[in-house]
Amino acid sequence: MRIGATLDTFAPRHKKIAKNKLLCYHFSMLTKTKKLLIIKEVATHDKDTGSSEVQIALLTKKIEALAAHLKKNDKDKHSRRGLLSMVADRQTHMKYLEKNNVKRYNAITRKMELKKK
Image 1 (cartoon, rainbow, N blue to C red):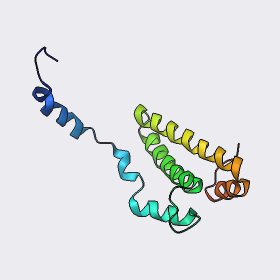
Image 2 (image 1 turned 90 degrees about the vertical axis):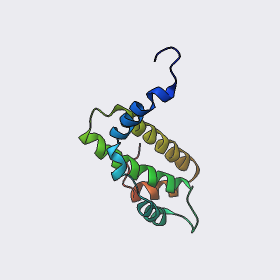
Image 3 (image 1 turned 60 degrees about the vertical axis):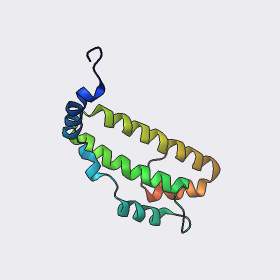
């Protein structure tokens, strides 16, 4: 960037780069209807959106979609970092659930077909 140049000088070029760089995995990610179906399947009551079971189920579906994307696009390092973050987050929820309610933990691992430790 030149000394004295403003960001407005470079804005059109940056916008063009941003438009060309679309993240293609967004199209395979969870839509609102898919998300609602997953929540209905796992929820413990009508308005349950934040329980550990729901969080684990949503993260599992996101992880599956992102893993499919990364199989096609193996050089997408930013998405890989996001995937690892989601896996760690799901693991945290699973540890919490296992520690506090083993029955619910076993039920969600069976339902989502997750491996135990």
